Image 1 (cartoon, rainbow, N blue to C red):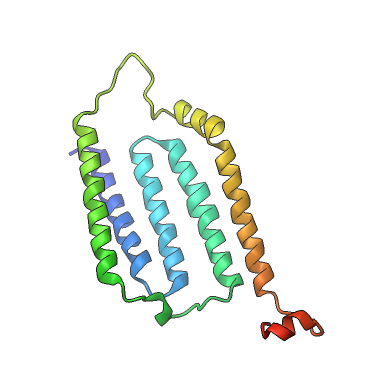
Image 2: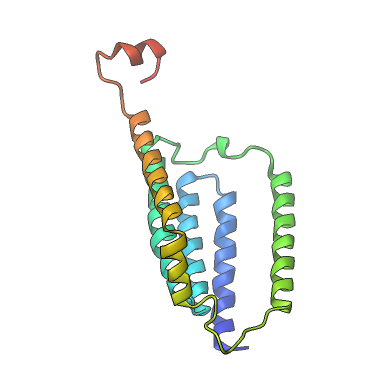
Length: 178
């Protein structure tokens, strides 16, 4: 075992445990916080794999922006903060079966990929920071910006939908909302 293995295995266990906590907790805010822990552990895994750029993107975009956006959406939509029976739909056996099948498929694909993987030493690796940065800022910059505008629009929509109606607004009073 190498030092990277010694660090990677506990980080993977933290990521797996916190991911399970995300989908099994009955408190929405706790699920969002467990999601932040999952993203942080995944960023640590990327650091161990010497993918520093991907680790920073994981921290800045996912653990930072997405979790904060999720928490703001929870607060602005007046979602239940404490335990809620609405979070359990009764489909746990089906969801568990789909999760196990998906995990088995992913493990099979990764195992087959590593079985036939090889690296040419004469060319730069495909996962180098230069290659990843080039792909992000050339090919994926437009989808990334579209996604950020979509997330901003959803946050603004949540603010508008949860804003209380003005006192004399007949349109909102006639529908019974507000």
